[in-house]
Amino acid sequence: MSDYQPLPPVPYDPELEPGLAAFLDLVEQIPLRADTILANREHFATIIPPVEVMVGDQPVEIEDRTVPGPAGEPDIVVTIVRPRDLPATPAPAIYCIHGGGMVLGNRFFGIAGLIADVLRFGAVGVSVEYRLAPEHPAPAAVEDCYAGLVWLAEHADELGIDPNRVVVTGASAGGGLSAGVALLARDRGGPAIAGQGLICPMLDDRNESASTRQYDGRGAWDRNNNDTAWDAILGSKRFTDEASPYQVPARMADLSNLPPAFIDVGAAEIFRDEATEYALRIWATGGQAELHIWAGGYHGFSGFSPDAEVSRTAEATRLSWLRRIFGPERPAEGTGTP
Image (cartoon, rainbow, N blue to C red):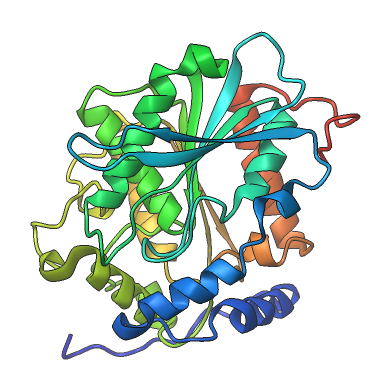
């Protein structure tokens, strides 16, 4: 944009700054640009611990399955996480979609949090491996994620899942894809979704909001990273009406009749404004959305600064939302839960 001007950023919560510095040192070693996506992907893979390390001695069972992908497309892989003492009664399900800008990461990114939630709620967790851009542009990622959800619903009895208590959730790109999956399920008459957990979600390719301008060259995922990712995802369709509204949920004209949304974002990050706008548009249709904007929070703050007061409050709020869908948490004794 010829009249583009950066804006002064919202200050970070001082208690979060050490975690942000650690994030930048660990993750942002190579600026994410079109010619560095593969190098970033290789580096990103090195910082995701092996699943055996993340499981440790926690009482869960891990299983990989190859399941049908979208019609005419390759199969996909999902990882299933169950408590070892899963009761005979149908369990709630958490369908997890990983972050990484739709260009980085794999289904094990963030699985430690999925394991914790599985143990807290006696749930079955499923984390999906989806195709990444630019090798697989839109709508490959969202279609893969939707195919995994369809498989989960069709195999609910086998998996011991209550089909009326399925939550789709993810952070960053995973939040955007979770929103897209909810839209596909609505429009295709697909599986019932009890809630969509959109954590710092990546929803809009246009990169024009005030918050994107405030975090240009700053923060854990900045305007430049976002441009790189959306260019890879959409190619020449970016900034046009040809962009799939399922992979770019902010472009969906109709946000009515969606499952209840939990939208969680920091005030000091790039996705603050598009997340807020998404909630406003859901409310305008009479839909249910719960929006939390955390003062001084950077992108992904609760994961990298878990002991900060604002992070503990954000996590407690997220769990409160899950309890309202799943019911109470299991007793901590003997479950490995905090």
